[in-house]
Structures are given as structure tokens and as C-alpha cells.
Length: 360
Image (cartoon, rainbow, N blue to C red; front, top):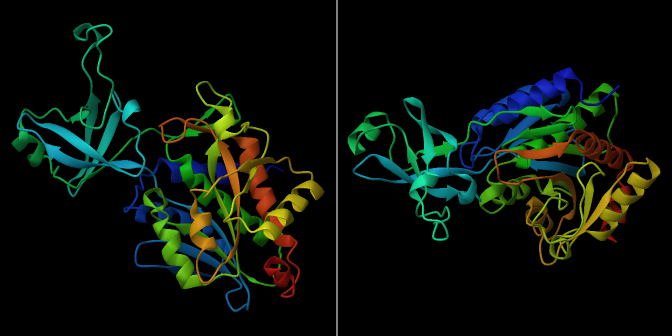
């Protein structure tokens, strides 16, 4: 039977379709915790909204499997007298894809619909066209002036998300905004589900961690690792499929969507833990790819690795096309294989003495 059964796909769809931008992750965390509840013993949450499901909380040793729950978005930054809204980023939002996109502006009165406007092609001069930039993209909510915008409940500081929803393309490609990295939260939840369904008794405490605020500097992971003080952390995030046009493979490496999880080499990745993951993949015949990062991974791996005097950490990534757009795309097989690889790696940790291996 496929790991991704109908119930799992329904959860993924609901979880992705829900808006949970950086700093406003609570509604998504509630969906995630409700799904995870049958598979864990208890929950830990912190003041900024990171959620942790715990299995075997009394155990001496602590292992984290982690993803991050937030998505990129915009903030209302300025409302002009003629009722147009100018924005700043909340995370790494891409200004070039904004024109002609629908948006949801989140207000105390509810969702206000708007569009990123753009001058018609007929009005632009060939060869002298302006490209979309942060200082020239704007949102139109159909109001005639600033007062009309404010009457709708829109003010400086309102967060703005895209409404694009989950779809399956050609039977095996999952497409949506916020797959970076709500897919991570989904995959670690499936690991917990498999452990429960297979009646696995772990010799350590497992902390299934869905961190907030990764998109603005790994902040949620920085906070929760100080609270949990884990012995081991396996982080999952997305990485670039580099097979589409206009990506320099000499700079970005060669990663294929559909060819398996990506195991990273980087200073923050602890060598013994990485090799255990590779050995597991080879033994279980799980396809995998390799990726090298120079100074840092750019993921929550860095936050866990350099905390608490050093935590043995590793990164398993999901290949993704069109990162930070509204049509982020991943392959179903890769999602299943990331889940399998995390699950099987956890099963290799047999007892407390195993942890000395990761410190040597």
C-alpha cells in the first residue's frame, strides 16, 4: 500500500490550501496538530507558535525530525491617495511573478480580495519596458481612494498571501504555493503515523517539530532547539530541481525531481549522521541524490547544528521546481521516499549507546 493514502492526501491538500505566512502560522499549526494527535503522546508549543509532537517523552535521548510551517507573503507598506497598495516582503517573495496575481489581504474584518495590477502591453514601449520591481508592483482592491481601502479594513501591516490551491498534475506531481516547506510538516507527520501504525517502540524520545519563521532567518528553529536540547536532528526542507531552463548546474548542482531525496554535504551536516542516512538508503534501496553546500545549508539544519554546544544534524531535502512561486512542484515518489528514508533511519538507532556513534 502506498504511504500516501487518501486520508494523507486530503490532509496535505487542506494543510497547503490554508494560509499560514511567516509570523501567522497558528491556523496551519492547528491543522497539523489535529492530524498528528493520534500518533503522538503529547505536544509542546512555544510562544511564537512552533509545534512539537512528542513520542516517548520520558526517554533520556532526544531525536528531532523537523520541517518548517511558514510560507512567504507580503505586508501592506503604503496606501496611496488613489487607493493603490504598495508592499514589502515577508520572507523571500518574488516580485517578478506578482503582476496579474490575485491576492488575499488578511484583515480583522476578514479576507479582502485584490490583484497585483500591471500596465497593459499596449501602453508599454518595446525595448524600454520596465520590469516588475519591489518599488513598482502594486495591489488594486477596487477602491477609489485611500479612505475606500481603509474602510475595507486594510491598513499598513496587514499580511498578504496568494490564494493558489493544491492540484495534482499528470497524476504524480503535486503543485501548490507553500510546498516550501509545508511539505516538510506533512512528511514528518507521516513518519509519526508509520511508527504508530507499525507499533514501533523507540528507545529514544522523538520530537516531531514543525518550526515557524524559517523564511525570515531560521528563527523558529533557533528558539525551539534551545527548549528541546536534542541529541540528534534530522531536518527536511526543499531544494531546487535544477533541470528546468535558466538554472546554472555548475553553480547549483544537478538535481532531478523524481530521482529521490537529496542528502546534503555541508559544514553543518554531521558526517556520521549523514553516512548513517546514506547507508540506510542503500540498504533499503531508496533512491537518493547528493548536494553540496558551501558555507551553510540555508535551512533549519544550521540552527539545530550550532545550538546547545553542537547538535548532530543532517538534512534530507525534497527536490522542488519553481521555488517561491505559486506553482511549486514536487514528485509524489520523492515525497514518499523522503518519508521512507527518515522512517528507516530512525529504526537504525537501536539503543542509547547508538548515540555515541554520532558524537565520534
